[in-house]
Length: 243
Image (cartoon, rainbow, N blue to C red; front, side, top):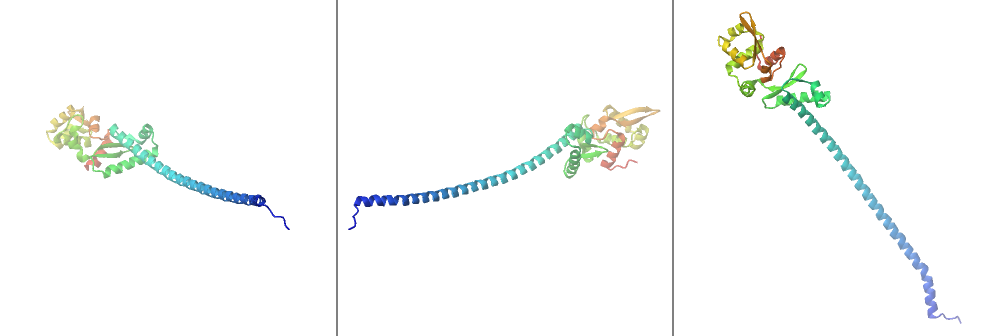
């Protein structure tokens, strides 16, 4: 008869037979867990890469926007510098003077000057920027010159003096005798007043005098100091026929 196995023998053998199967199951679980971890890790890395790419994109756009903003602010700043220089100078300035002193490129200075001229033409303002030969100057528009002149150095001028002074400026050098024929005998008093206030120069010419305007006149009314340039500018601004 076959030999009967004891209960203990069966348990030991079953346990020994179950050990490899248990280990195999654990290994399979470990493999699956490892796969899951690798998959999760791969997904996390992919998400991180996506985040980095997104951040790079936003950063790139931000850098471009900041660069454009900086360039716009720089242009505004440089244009304002030129505007301020023209205001502070009170005298015509060349492109060379502006780009040398302000350290702005020559092409940019010319560009900003053209822009400023257009801006002042569009504005409702008493000021204008004009081109006189190779120079540029900020000055008062002709229609505002008379009422504003009272605030300039030397005080205001009554209309009668201003009219006489305008004729002298346009016709200079002009003899006093010629001026009297144009303005009447009151011109004698006008001339003396204008000389006393530093607006006229008078040089003796025979029995009469030759009259010309001074630098103070040009500075007060924002006109070129060169006489010929002054005449051209006055003819243009005031619409007066200088014949």
